[in-house]
Image (cartoon, rainbow, N blue to C red; front, side):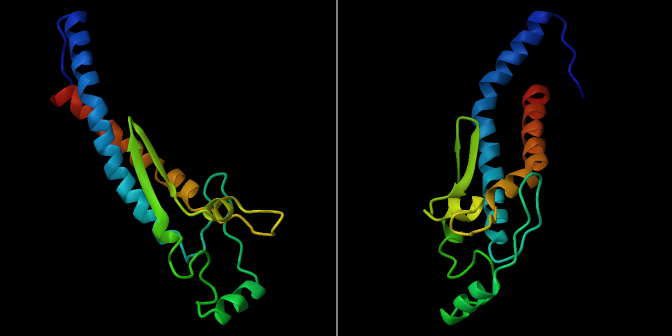
Length: 152
């Protein structure tokens, strides 16, 4: 139930209290969101992905790549997934209201964005994960603001 304020000062006082409460609460919410998105991103490895927003759908692996994968003892048609080592470098961080999602792998930028010189098509993981889950993250943050403003 929305709260009524008897004066602008009472409203300003409440805004001040909310402002003091929100930074750690935002980081807590973003940590929860980050954990979810990390799992979503990891699940994309090995599964062809459709396009998401401005990011393209994943191209099929070439027959040559599939043959090479099979010779090395990997499944032939699981894009971005061989041993799982690159997938397992997926992580997130939260710092002062900023959520980051990505990988510590040196090869992941080439996989995410592609490399025309080496004929590697983009197979984005982290951009689509953030794009597809933006409304979830926004909803979680708005619930925190609502809670801070009306229930604190």
